[in-house]
Image (cartoon, rainbow over all chains, first blue to last red; front, top):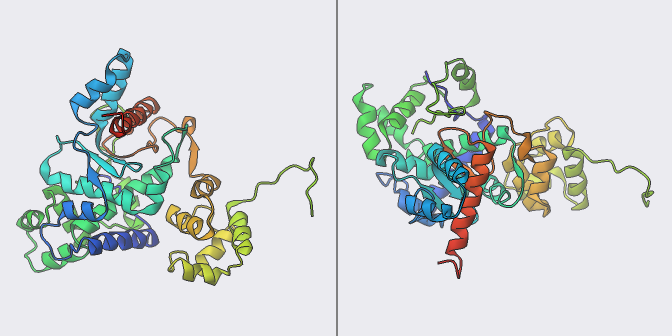
Length: 227
Length: 129
């Protein structure tokens, strides 16, 4: 089993689910399949950057006149990131290279940072200073955003209710992934949650922590994200 | 009573500070529970104020900052949730930008990305593009 970085205390999970419900309510998205990510974004007053931070022309334009070292550092940073939420601009930058089936979760993860006021306010603070979120809180915010995205994409218990009507077989997550606009790995991991193999609450963390971490693709520690 | 100028300033703990602000706002712990729509329960607030919970979830701090009309940043700092960038160790998660990242950014990478996003914002403003 891979490390799961989505576990939360029950109280924290309840707060995240409340924010996710509000987002679904505002977009009138309950019962609409696949879950209408663009409508949820619009209802949240969020936009996808048309020319994003991942656009090579933007990167090149920025690097004009800058030292080679700056280019290496920025490109290295961009290579590690798939999505960015710019709290000041209410803008989301998405790496178009990410497979389409995974983009809905990716976008909804960034919507989570916006819809959770504690995240939105915090990420406005660090543009012009040498301060940062404590790594423990940064981790927490990521897990909260993951749970937000999962709840919205699968419309709370909507996925569980549908999965319960299907046979417990490998094809079930495949069928339901398309229905909800999720990727296969995410649908499979959610199926595992429903059947009790893993959990969203903190009780699963010790089990996850005991699993060997996958080798990083490049430098730095790796985050596993079931998108 | 006026404080003597040579008296060293004692920094209140997060709990003491929140209790003093709540009292200043003339609110009971039950009032807070009601006003925050039960986001901050009476029992939970009591534990924070008494120092039994030293690390409340940031969403609790945000709700209290809104209700008391105090700075959320200040509460986050008092809780130890906002720290200098230099205090982050290698391998710990970056925290200046909300990213969906496969790996942690180094301090240098994150600083460069912050700068790049600033550039993209400036290009959007009148006179930018």
